[in-house]
Structure formats: structure tokens, C-alpha cells
Image 1 (cartoon, rainbow, N blue to C red):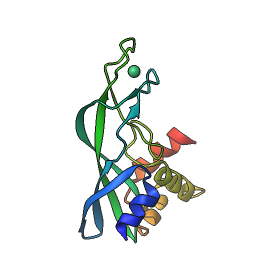
Image 2 (cartoon, helix red, strand yellow):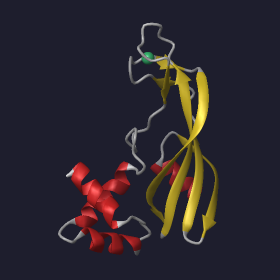
Image 3 (spheres, helix red, strand yellow):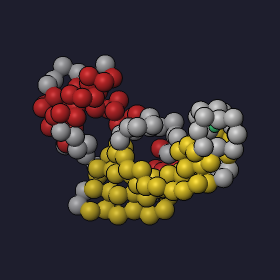
Length: 144
Ligand SMILES: [Zn+2]
């Protein structure tokens, strides 16, 4: 079931394993792509430099809070004229420096509507989205 969700929500990522700790799912995934495009110059590369864990939140899964641990690849840029020697692979569902997926941010912002940050945080919590008042406020200032 959870593998199907990964296929659906995270195209290009592969399910590794997951844990469920009292309503919090910690999901480990990795990218299946062998090559990535350097965002600075547009050259494709398949030389992996290293891996690191990138953590972010996504929409709840079956009422559980969902924390994703992405085994993120860093590549060498093979274009000698590029201003960067390495780059980290990026994905459509999340912005480069974000800790939340785009769809989770949309969900939080649409829950905000006319209610206060405090009320929004409270009602989101019931759906498995665990954010504090300040986070709701910051997202609103950043994206609307
Ligand atoms: Zn490059």
C-alpha cells in the first residue's frame, strides 16, 4: 500500500522502508534516476559525488503524519565551463530549500482562509498535519 503511495506521490523515487511510530510515519526513499541535469548549466551528469539525507514533510498518509527521508544524490557537473563543480538533484514536488512538499504547503494555505494561524494549526492537527502557529504564519507571508 505505502509503496503504491510512493509511486503516486513521488515519481522518480523508490520505496526503501518505513516505520510507524505512534501516528508518525518515517519513510525512506531514494531516487531511481541515474543521471541528473545540472541546474546551473543544463548539462546531464551521471557521476555521483555523494549522498545525503534530506528530510521533509508531506501530506499525511492514512491519517498519519508523514516525514520523508530522501537519500538525495549529489552529482559532479561534467561541464568544464560550468560555474559549479557539483549539484544536488532536485524534484518537481518540492522547492530546493523547502522542508515541505508543494502540495503540503498548498493544503496549509488553503486551510488558512479566513481563520487565524492558531485555528488553522489546530484544525490541521486533526488531519495529521503537525504545524505550529508560527509556521502557518510564515508560510502565509512567504506564499500569499
Ligand atoms: Zn553545470
